[in-house]
Image 1 (cartoon, one colour):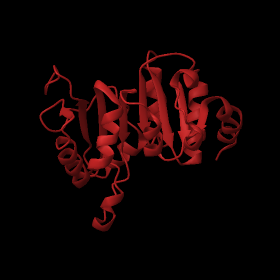
Image 2: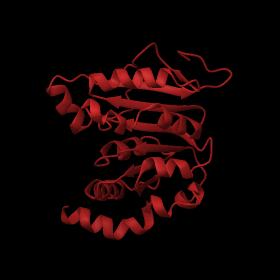
Image 3: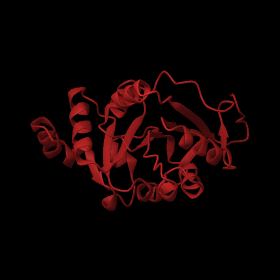
Image 4: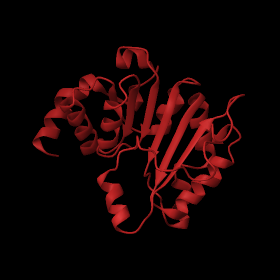
Length: 215
């Protein structure tokens, strides 16, 4: 880690960080100091996307979950530089954190470029699989959005099949979504495009009585 990242971790973690193991009971009002719609980002990497989206969306709170310490430190540093108060970061297993949340707690879940585990024998480690999707969906409010993105074509198709198969989700588009303008282009995404790997976005919402595809 750089000196700036180390300082950010030391100074800001006690205020803006939490460990998943210490997150029970989950209380977003105490965590953020206000009551607002909550966005969960699973696997925030170096934090660029989280910070950019939170800065453009001050009326919602953003909770990032990451296991990579330099990424956590960089996110804290970026949030401080931009003076953001609607960003927090959790360290640990994202699914364990989701299990601590009550139903309908989330306005959106973002899963951008998760590990594709490309070898067939490792597919069971993928995040987007039916039991995990059912858990994530149960924590979304009706109409809440599950937004996934990947640069791995085979995983994109696997994601689409899995998400289509969840009875509580509805695809907001006919297949893959057009690239949303609100999702920032990261260095990782630029490298993927330069290598010839197209990006697939998938936008699903928790089904409700008036929610239909394309709405």
